[in-house]
Length: 89
Figure 1 (tube, helix red, strand yellow):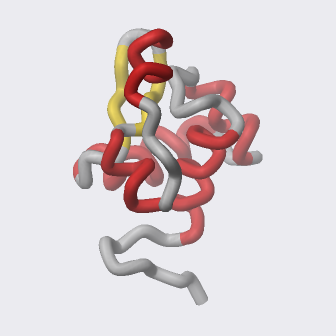
Figure 2 (spheres, one colour; figure 1 turned 30 degrees about the vertical axis):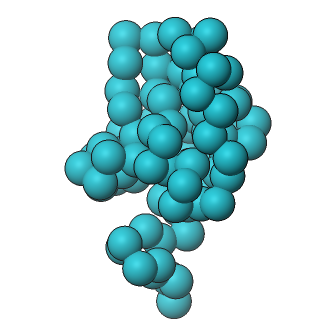
């Protein structure tokens, strides 16, 4: 049974965001890299996981890759460091 949180994220959604934030400092990260980090097919990441995260404003897709938003950090209880994010962009 999938555990769904208060905004509708399941374990795969949370895993995606946690990997993006913890392993890749919030991004930007390419699709192939995220798929490999999650042990998921690229199509699953792009077609199943990402659309809902984008709809909720937790994820942005940029020309350089996927980036976690401030809202994603806050929802998962991570400290958002704006200066760090700006240096990456």
